[in-house]
Image 1 (tube, rainbow, N blue to C red):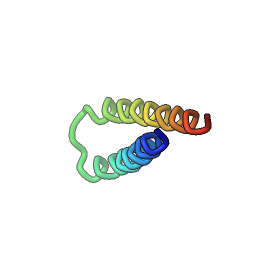
Image 2 (cartoon, rainbow, N blue to C red):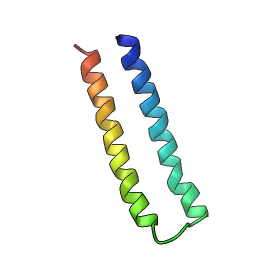
Image 3 (tube, rainbow, N blue to C red):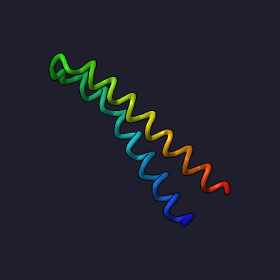
Image 4 (cartoon, one colour):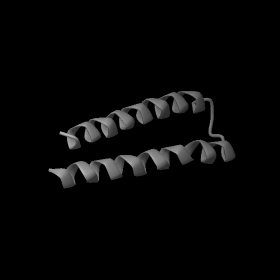
Amino acid sequence: MENEIGVKSIVAKIIIEAMAAVPNIVAKNPPNSYAAEDSQRQLELEMELESILSDSEDDSSR
């Protein structure tokens, strides 16, 4: 079970790092008017991933 939590944590961190790079890519190649909606969605995803991470850390401390 500990390994599963560790893997989830690592995968979530990788995803967060990848999502952090997205604004830089978009800034160099602005797509269209959906950029603001995409930014909002990205923030929602980051919060969701951080929630997963904190839940994993809570589970691992038990």
